[in-house]
Image 1 (tube, rainbow, N blue to C red):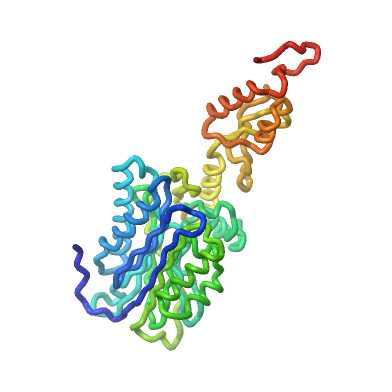
Image 2 (image 1 turned 60 degrees about the horizontal axis):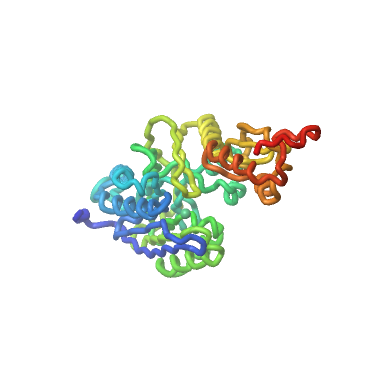
Length: 399
Ligand code: MG
């Protein structure tokens, strides 16, 4: 049992939360946990039970591991959560490859140390988000660690394009991927009436900022959380939806000169080789990149894209021949799939259903699987047909 700091706080927070499986998925891999002064949302990923376990292990580890007093201690608690996820995955092969996003808000000692005014610390990794609604409107505190967010920062995509991009689920950072991940952190001055929103992507992929701001400002925290989730589910509920609303109910007034802008994130950098690992059969992949400048962003994005674009194999039509390709049938941005082999079986010779499937493209896991399938195609061609059709030799056949 971890005892909390027995000290008087200069602020008091009230919170409400809801998590919902949504309308498409079978399992809720999000998790939300909070105490009087620590508030956490996580969105897990990984096949089987992995995502659920990863998000729960991480939220519990942060809440138990954070005993103050400051922002640096909160970062340490998140790093501890990362180790907890990795350790759990190492203990159970079913959980191998699991990971999770995590965002956390906590009351910490302000710049004056203990006894001075309190501050709020935020730590984030992944693409769950922290927003603040104050008198000036809704502002986003956290930055997404995702492929499309990197592309927006590099000027390759607009925010509007990113919001609907088919690869917007690809993360560049998460917990459970490597020993020492880079996490972002902030220290903010609280003011009475501020409302913070911590949420998974299932919320903001359904609702725009204007609607989020409208709902967030209206009613007690728990009611607000319920309405936000209900509306995201009604709008489609394509993913799990989790919302945690935290209001500063006692604290200093907004300074008469207004608020300073939200500061830039303080990235707690880790160093290490770039590596990638698809997260089981989850539609997301997580890829680690080290990013330091615009040039590094562009290089990292190109690398991430090429790793992602080259995952997988498929059978398709190469100018009338059945062929095996490396990559993804749709291609991704400027990466086209690469021809691997083919040329000895004409698509026109395939039976109708096989021909349609090949033209549509058939994704496969390995080159061997592709070769086995193509050998199978030869056993039910439209007619006993020659491998290399030659009208002068109607008996030649590869059967
Ligand atoms: Mg999600």
